[in-house]
Image (cartoon, rainbow, N blue to C red; front, side, top):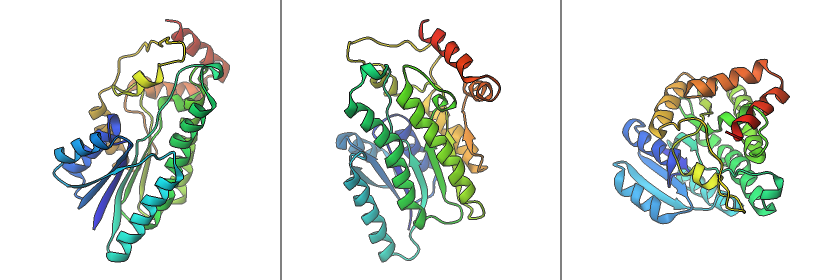
Length: 260
């Protein structure tokens, strides 16, 4: 049996990746993971492929244990069991300085954006074979330090570096691995991220990307096993600037954009 695992599937990029796999993935079953059970049930009704909703909070390590147990149980029943796709799209960010965030918010961000992503990749790899594909959703924020979005940007830099190194470790195994680093995407992320404790909001000076475009483009890039998918020209330019400009200069540019 060939399966796909998609986290963050209740909305945004995760939901679009599940739809893409349903149309193009040629798998027997899709495991969709998110906290909101009702959203997962809605998506299940929409997809043609057999779908298994898993309403789990990935910041809880017991949820990772649950998925690992399911993987081992499935493999024990079927010697041909294969994780053909792993899409780690779960994550969240929050605008604001250290003073605007609680310790719980910071811990949850690091747990979901970093630890859960690594754990799910780690438990899935033993069941992945030549032709399997991994998408780790990072961000264009991973290309530079971003004051006012510090923890989120740092967590996505972790994802980008982790993905690049793991891709090297998997070289020769035929497993494709790509870090997806788009700019603003039209999802619930912005609404959640810009809610601060004092009720202020943060403007974004760029047009937002259609999640369908990001998914389609990143899957094309992943098919070539290229390590980074920026999905738009501004994000590509941010990646180039990271290579040629000193960090202080980039941070002052970002500061100017924040004040627009």
